[in-house]
Length: 336
Image (cartoon, rainbow, N blue to C red; front, side, top):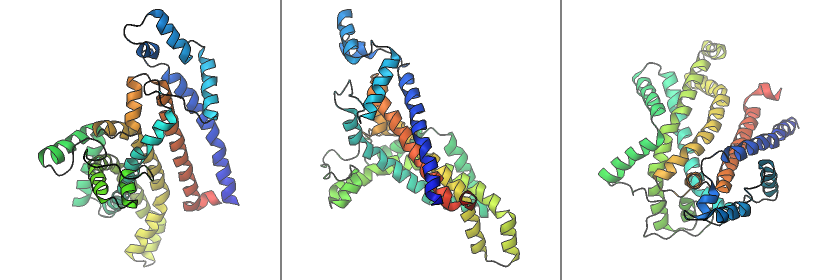
């Protein structure tokens, strides 16, 4: 019962957060340079033709009227229509979102699987060889732009060594798309036993996932390391050591008490990766949601851009909500 009350309190904040985000997104998008009416009317359009396009799009109305219309369309489940593709934004997002989620989920998975053990190792072997190497790597990864690292990875593993396919999307040009199940090509190919498509999808996933993992994994690693150091020096671990508990048990207790902090950084990692995937998707011509957002900015296409930022805000809010709920189980102080 206490859990459901806690979850209800957290859920009550979601509408407020989304309202604030919708206001910020709507007005910031309209500060972008360039008038979409001119872009749609064409370079040789007359003033009358531009005014006609502006009226058709509703851009001649006051901003508060446009905002009310925008909120009503969201409440009705409509995210508008792209002025460039003439397709409903919702359909475009449904087509592109699985590709982005495939990258983000795999990058988070490998960041957690690699980052937490490395963080524990460096905390235990403090000032050892492994600690110095990992510490140096963490500093280097924090200073590298992800798109630059992606270009280096492509140059080495595609151009020089030829181990992986080039940045041409999610599949080889000669391979057909697997039957749609989830929209994630590798998973769909696995579920439908389409092995040529599965092999091609996995090979195309390697370089972008390696790029995102290599750049963002140090967040998990460094957080785990610093938290474990604090825990290993705490009174309860000192008492456990004095009581004769094994080193493995001491590490187990220390890691368990480090988990709330680690879970928080994993939630932040989702947020970073959604932003970081924008440039990485562009470099690899991935065709995901990030590339869609970049094209929307270039074309001053308001509806897809607003939808992307709003969707990112919703996703991030849900992730942080799950982090808070995980805190409920991991931290007994919240339960009390």
